[in-house]
Image 1 (spheres, rainbow, N blue to C red):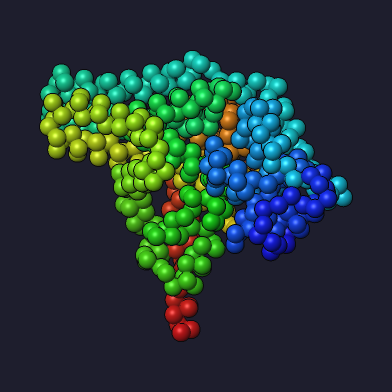
Image 2: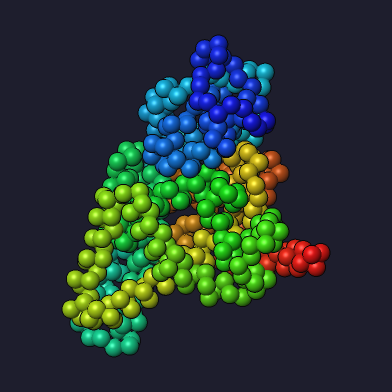
Length: 444
């Protein structure tokens, strides 16, 4: 695709129905002040102004500017008919017929989606999600009753901290379902449940999570588009980022040691420090006051319950230990699926290839399903982000078959193997940085 073009937002001369080349569409990538066009099913839409109002956030839709967004559009939106009504106002033309030809891998992915829809895999189990909420609240209540009835000692305090950490982690897996609109085709139902689980049950920001996580799904492991791989302050990942950071001269850490300090600085501190700061920063800078109200309801409840038993300082310590437990649990699970995989610039790959190069699975068993919140089926989740997680394993054989047809590697690891590969990939990336950085210094 070509770059450049004017910086004016306009309808192409010749009328709305004019055919447009991929070269012209590619120039509308939103960079350097240019406008933003994207393609859905061969039709071209100018989303320059709409991107600022996009419910999923302006960045996630902007990441497809100048590209074909058909597969991402299908994956993210449950109610296609309703959403397509809004597209008419942004329509500026269509891709020239001679340049519009779907690849076989795209056609096969569409067919796979139709198959899993017919199998009923997008239908949620109310009982399943009700049980998840029961678990979360149940462990929360047990943590409080443990201290209330048995008093404060090292053992009771530690047990309550662990129970709270468990409750918070399970709430994290469940809010993930609601955030992905997995429980209902009515968006507002999912949003209310997401505000409740993310805000009232966890003390976090629903809107901030949407802003960050949707970008990750739209362009997983894509440098400068997936916020989860922007780690260069403490870590470098993949094979390209280490060289880029080394050559920039902006290295802030001895990255060749990152596999050693990751267990100390990464998992334990992600939630208590980074996430805690970023979610409130997002709320206040974006003026998300409803989000703030739900978020604060968690802290009001927590302090009312525990300060009379523990006092202020021990309550704060309890909260921090809870956050550390949750952070360690979440980070090891979530990074085992992505950090060891390919991390690269955006090359506009088809959906199946894009997700599989950046994602792997962990083995299925009862413990792994519970411990990972079914994110051991990360591949299927990334291909079908709105599919309820209890159905992901049923889609796995079909996904494996499609990957085999197109020669795409479908990776499944043990839980231990996934965790081990995090450190192995960090070690490899650190070595690439070390070689590039000190080679550059020697040259100077």
